[in-house]
Image (cartoon, rainbow, N blue to C red; front, side):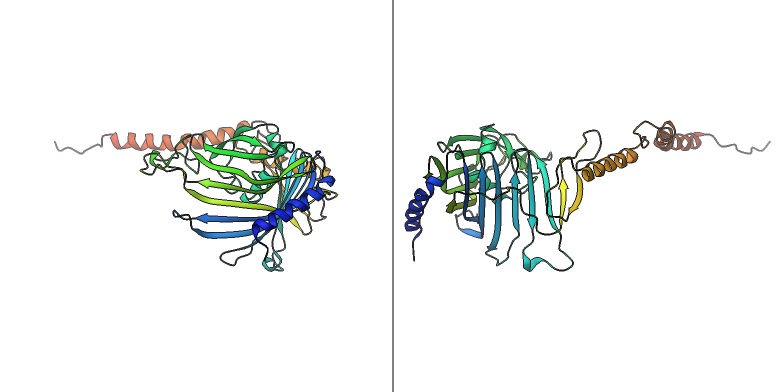
Length: 363
């Protein structure tokens, strides 16, 4: 059996031979493995999950595919694939064949703006950090992002600082994540004893080994470690205790990329499209079923018509407004009357109680 160390040297020789096909212009496809572990306080893994990944990059555009294989419980996951076209991130989550039934053939997808993949799973985010994050870190080497080890839409935000990059590729070599505000994990106001302390290193991404691919440098082994963070009024002050570890390695590099970097849509997919939103109403997205396997353009007439219908419906349902969005005096008056009515009834009841009763007196 070939050891991990021996495989590393074989891979370095292979990548060096392939280097002539990968230019400094950052066009490549890489494949590899990712292992996620949950550790107890003694450092022993109590849970582990294994995945395969494939990343294709063309300058600042990318596509990441994550195939969730199995975990320590013997359970299989889904397949997640996402692509960035320079403006929006397109994502699709496909159920594994053994999880699909005749009554459940609908995959889920999303389209949203921004270059940070907050809509992706932690597994895919780690792969993005290692292999496809140039478009994000070329703009901001420090700032605030959702913690990459948490699920989509999770809080709190973490302060990140890109402290070191890989020369020529500009991919991150070291990133530190620290708590920045005293907020609870849910973002809600809670007792201070449940809040996180500030300025603690709660995560660290680092490249463990890298290699030259032509004139570019890519990570060959990398990891993201999430650390324990003490809370306010906690007696525990040790913040170097690892809780979760994502460790990945690249096993092959290809100089070519697919003809498109949009994720593949092979089945009927229910899409949440966040490109269509209106700040003056409650319309934050439109939803539709994608059946032709093609991601729609933002100027697609069908989507524009759907968005207009959503806007009209939102304005019609807004209290005190008619279909055109103008205030309706009659509806407004009725709403005000219903709001005042309880106070009027209370006043009348109290006045009735205080009124003296007439009594019959004998003469």
